[in-house]
Image 1: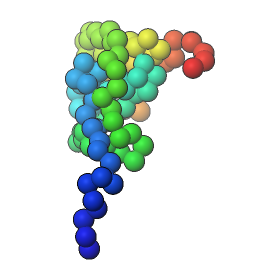
Image 2 (image 1 turned 90 degrees about the vertical axis):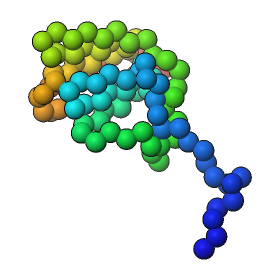
Image 3 (image 1 turned 180 degrees about the vertical axis):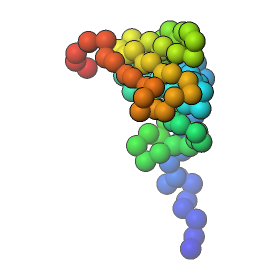
Length: 102
């Protein structure tokens, strides 16, 4: 089988901007946009997916605080709370800041 010609290949960049990434224990939280959050537990990957070919969108303005292993991450649109060392189902919440619309 022949290789796909270069001009037909889709070039991707699955790595997000470092400034948009917060690590909470074994959880990596990436703000792709102020509303689009990627959450990975355990083995992280920076490869593109069928859904997102490029994760290096514009920088998101993040405010991050850590108090007693409770991380709070604020984007323009969301408040994400992550408790390090606790199962995701029990230690992660995402709240909208109430803005509606696109």
